[in-house]
Image 1 (spheres, rainbow, N blue to C red):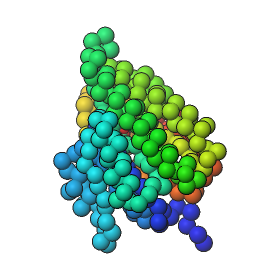
Image 2 (cartoon, helix red, strand yellow):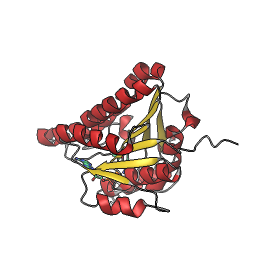
Image 3 (cartoon, rainbow, N blue to C red):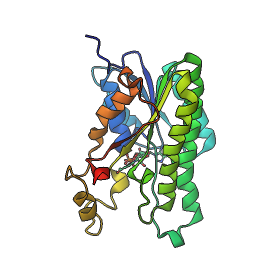
Length: 252
Ligand SMILES: NC(=O)c1ccc[n+]([C@@H]2O[C@H](COP(=O)([O-])OP(=O)(O)OC[C@H]3O[C@@H](n4cnc5c(N)ncnc54)[C@H](O)[C@@H]3O)[C@@H](O)[C@H]2O)c1
């Protein structure tokens, strides 16, 4: 029987692949036989790429600051050249800034919106052009529970992730007819460096875990199945979906 989840001969670019959710999703795609290239600003990127290697299959990487518009373009071009094409794009690079909204510095607003939304749009646009030309492609954006809810002290992040969900739907409407599937994963509360202010925090943790039917923080590995599904032919009729992987948080 043909394995509809197999990604052999598929070429994937994963932003933010040096840590947390991006790293686990990169590993999932690689384990499903995709050829991958991670783009990340982290000093650890080469180390992470080497750690992901199994059976001598290469893990490609491009070190770049995706908050810089020129580097967004040049790193995508470089990754495209390394891979010789693109079938899958995962936009996982993201950042968070927390301040009470009434005192939220506009500089931090700009930082969050630039990386979490503007860069995501530009990456989608560059990948989309290639995918439209070839008549197929899979774009997977990373949304959030805050694509649905407002949160506290995170107005820029909530605005950016609400934007990611809406952008995903717009691109679906325009590119679905051209063979490109654009979807998003909305992770629940996951234990990664991004949430270190919350994990173990007595003011926040009980509320988060108390509302999560699975009764635990998510682990980066929890996203592997969904990203492989969305990157593979198994999801060819899934368009514009924002798929929660949240231990049931939204159900409560
Ligand atoms: N952790 C959660 O609970 C959670 C929940 C929902 C959504 N998300 C989203 O998942 C994505 C990944 O978050 P994570 O939890 O894995 O965080 P993380 O901090 O572990 O990973 C983020 C990665 O992005 C990279 N990055 C940050 N700024 C960059 C820049 N300017 N240029 C290039 N790379 C940059 C970092 O180096 C890091 O490798 C983000 O979009 C985040 O908003 C996380």
